[in-house]
Image (cartoon, rainbow, N blue to C red; front, side):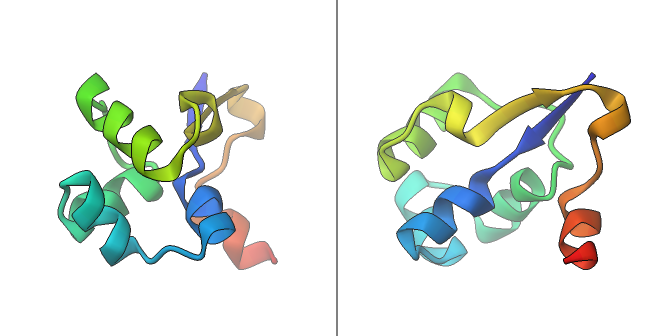
Length: 81
């Protein structure tokens, strides 16, 4: 089982920078990068709530469960494009 983080998709839809997003959510840009790149082991509900509030979205817009066979890091996906 793998959870794919789709923060980058939501940021792109809104043309919002990581820096602006980090400031509005109350995270450091480095911590946003950890989330975006799928390296986070956990996310507090209060952080998830803040991200959804800032992006005006639902948690399912930011997080998706996929079978391990189909999961690959976003950096690998981006490199294939």
